[in-house]
Length: 399
Image (cartoon, rainbow, N blue to C red):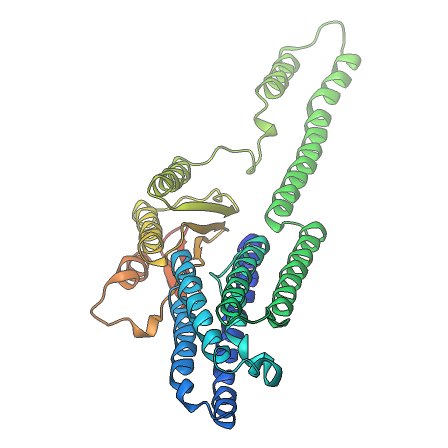
């Protein structure tokens, strides 16, 4: 049984995106842990009047983090950097304006919101994108700090916290990218390896059959001619002509790997290409990976349901995911044609979908069940969505 795994590039994108997701958690924890320290410090320094404003500004930063987690899109992340940057500026001015000595007493307390700016960005699927967002957040944090110290008339002391977080984040992304690059070099692409193996097997099979045919026709015929009398009889002549036709026609060369695709499979492949082109024009780029269709016939209603379910899954990505790319992997074996649609969008909670909502339940799951196929949907808020659609290649799945 073949184990289904994510396409290599999709898996790499998911792993890289987890670094950004971890940054959200660390940023939120930083703000939450800063709150009690802030309260204690301002109370001890007899600055209770400044406490409400400082807490409100911390709340703005935390609210921005929550917004990015719930809707991980570029414009939301940019809005977060603007709003949280302004809140960070106000927070630092609030702490420094009437009490410059707080920098000496609690330097870490002043730049805690700046750490959250470095850590939060959209869920990057590539290391360079993640580094770019971290650098942008660091720049906003530094600008906020410089302006705050200038307003308060103090010597700039932004602290090393944001810089250390930036360095650690860049190291994490680069380490992950390096590991993935080594894996790409050392571990073969299994789809390519499978195709190469099939080609080698086909070549070996062709060599065996060529040897057998040459032995059974050409070599035997030469032996007959060499040992025959001056004139060969009619029966021998017919045999020689038959062998010549066999070699000339080359039907014996063909194997199952060289036979043309059935019309049904060719049509299905063409429909998939047209579907990819259509969604490309509508703003959704599809990365098609996996094995080509196997040489098995799909019933007309099964092929129609498979394409309709795939279209519905892609429509869901286009309308609701908030991303412009999706992975479509096609896997075909002796019994099923399976398609997996994966996106790194906002995701959703399948358990929270109301029973009266149609959506993927009707357009994908029930449609495939009606023709003996299967469909399953995996999703979570902020984690993207994966839809697996499987259809039987011959007859309907009895199970």
